[in-house]
Length: 213
Image (cartoon, rainbow, N blue to C red; front, side, top):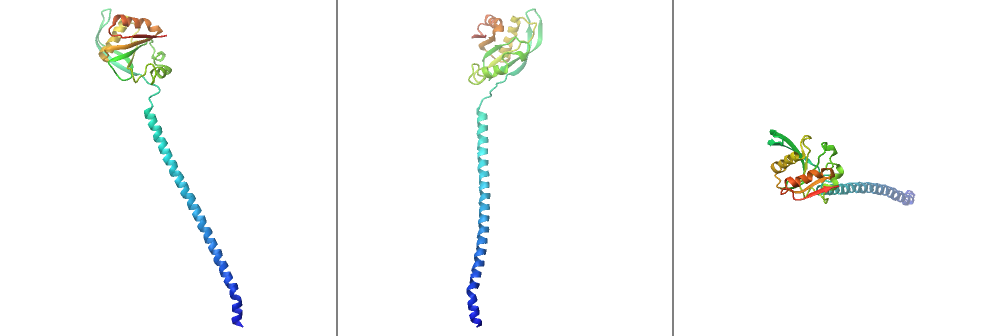
């Protein structure tokens, strides 16, 4: 009787064991799936961050390369100060030393584009205005600073006559900047007289004259 009872319960016992095994296997599979999904998600995020880093680095290098290749949109004049020795004025006055100045733009060359400006205040200068520096001296513009050497002559002193001022400027150009020829002398309308006087006093030094109106 006991053997028959044990035999009658054995299929049920086996079914319970299979049920428990199936449940544990399913739970283990679920945990493995969840772990695999989390791991895959983490790897995806790491890969995405790595790709973003590469793109950012590439974009940054490209921007720096473009910045190096692009010329300055607004060329700037450099002020130069000199000392002239033994300068003699037309009234007979002589000075052993005379401080003078000018502004230059571009690489120094033996020939230059001379810009006349009789304004005493540099802030009101036509040549030093932001739009002038960008539209006249920028790359590809009429007075491209990469192609020409520009000299902006300061007014220096209000008590000097036009002829004295030109003689003073001639010494600056010839002695201090090493210019052997004025390629073009350019002036605005109010400097027309000075430009013409340059041609009269130093005809071999001035090649061409241009008046902006």
